[in-house]
Image (cartoon, rainbow, N blue to C red; front, side):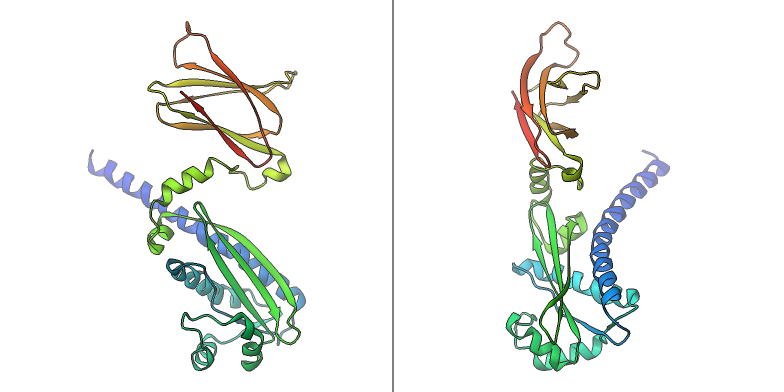
Length: 275
């Protein structure tokens, strides 16, 4: 491999990593945009917001909660029209003086009282949930005086290489791949009434797989894929209905197909194992 090829390869992988990092940050930004939009609609120029430290479930998730919280402190003021974000240095000073939580979190029972103490009209609380293949972020804005919820937002954050390394997650790639086998990758699957079907090739040979909807009409669905040994492949975004499948060794026209049936459920991804 010459120097030019090496440089192109390095640039390629760098671009992929940057893209994945941007996907994570963009997912956070969408949640912030939703919160900001509601506050701009319901608030006023003197409406002051405080951003509390985000909560988490496990010890290794504290760095993630802190990162997401920092993004809120950074982006929320830039989107403010009919609200103001409390000065960060002032908030930290109050927090250090009055917080009794060793982990740096405000007790849910005293959230309202703390908000009144620092003269915030409303406060933002959030929590991160780390699953095998995705991170769930839930955010709530609460009125300090009434204790009523002003608005909420949630989002799914992708687990990327950088985030997994930052959090010290182990075997995250394998867990992510396994989890993706059981659910559709289409975020609009419920609206489009589609799901996925995947085939796991457990044999020592390459397979050719063809599918067709059982209700064969003029608009009948015909698709095919080739899956190498010990690999798996998927048919994505299939309408929810019944299908038939058949498979045989690749480039073996003289060998008859093995057959079977399956049904696509909305937003689900099934796995059929082939021996």
